[in-house]
Length: 153
Image (cartoon, rainbow, N blue to C red):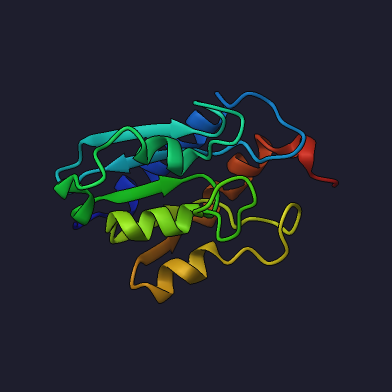
């Protein structure tokens, strides 16, 4: 998949917009995710707690597609927060779900701060599996602002 910075910025902005739909929580981040195919079409969108109280954004988006959907092998996941690499509420982390789905590329706005887990390893796990991880820090503040109630100044 060939993308340019403006395309990444557009889809990641959409992921941040989706994070604003999350039901509030004092114990979890509000995150949005968009899966975009190689042809530029949205394959699925999701946000934290969209389906249930423990649902993560990437998990919600991936859950809307068949596990063996061949389009996933050339798609990009745009997530307002680094995909989780540790998880207590489900057997598989979002990083593991992305790797298992065969997604080759992930674009994130904000690295997970040390609040619910110490030293989130999501992007490291993805990179170790050969997934290209891009960070667009210019959208970090927008992603952070949705979660300001969880963070101390």
